[in-house]
Length: 347
Image (tube, rainbow, N blue to C red; front, top):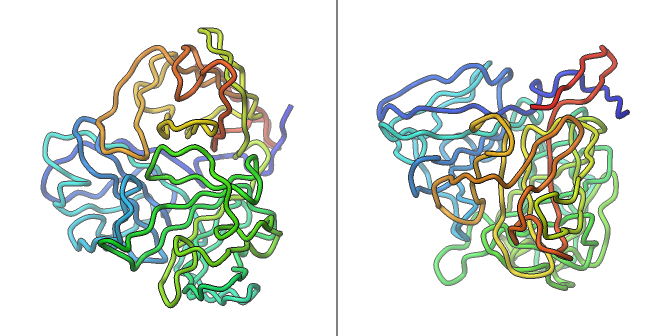
């Protein structure tokens, strides 16, 4: 069994469903004051909205686009003690539209500069207990290191350039430990894992820093970047890989906890980024699907089981379970048994 020091995962991550009203509203029930909130319309083709405490609540990024952030004073208007407040901005609060929000706790504030790397961050907000940090830094176009503050080796890093727009716009770059330090994925595109030197400088992250090469996507000279870094925490988060088997009794992926949120990406060929959570419909196998790299509304089919100790594809669908296909995933959830003996049950 996987025992954990995180007895209540919803102190650090939680999904909150939203019914848009086109005006203003304050959402409670998240369980903490979020530092990172990702909102996506469920019922409409609409953009993603990603907001964090380091950039400020008015700054929105879209995981399906390579564009710079947009500023909206009427989207998320504040992070609150048990959730967040929304204005009338349609991407997060359109009347008659349903939304999903996924919320993570970092350091509880914008934080301060981390000086562990050769580039000092402008701000780093870090939660070492949950293994999550948010860092803003300015690129130098030369091989460098950036401090993440986790005190543990990150297994997944997502970086987005915040300045470039138009013809110079930069993609979302993803490091995943299962792929190694010479490959990257692009969150806003379907590309397979590609070999690269200029993204992660062929250097594995350490417990204090991650490495970046000279590539514009992570290190364009004099331009700001945001980095989301994740370290594994037993019984709460897992960043791994699996091989599909191409049938309805799909590969079982052991996480050691009951997943509340899972994102999967095929890596050996081009395919979409698939996101599931345990609250949109809330029972197996009809888990609703959203895609990180598109603005598509959610769709459902009998394709995925979220279980007490992992997850299992239930369909020979290429984004999650092609025969011989290779996949990476990130998952968050509730431990099977914590130090307070809280059990997790299958749905």
